[in-house]
Image (tube, rainbow, N blue to C red; front, side, top):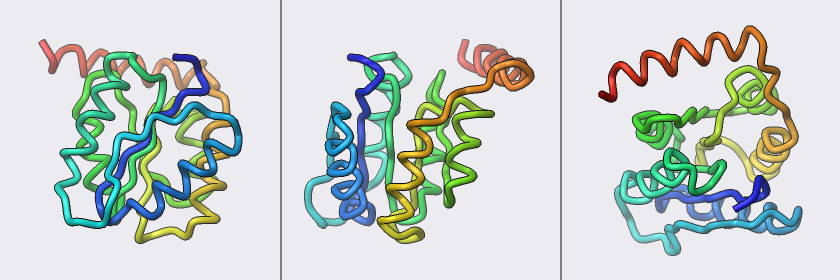
Length: 152
């Protein structure tokens, strides 16, 4: 899968937002891997966040988007996986910084927190932003060192 591939998943609270973001991604010619949920029946967000975070962690997809009601649960969950840098964002600035400074490979959005237009703009900004490296890479290396120590 190439760099234009993006996996996306949500729980029931984020399903409507997920569907809108999926449509947006398809409109910009991204290859979307939809990992559910596909109806509004109440589900446990880990059942959808875990498979996506695993795919990113294993390098099966280069990046992903997770949506739940607030985004908090999905971001906590996703960051349990080695090599995952999931960023919960709430505005365009944090979406840009998630990529430029933290090289986030999963964007997390609260479906009950932000509107669809803002969510699309945050996603677009994150996709277009470039990791700056340099001092930011040094900081990420320290996180990776800790992660490697804790995942032995």
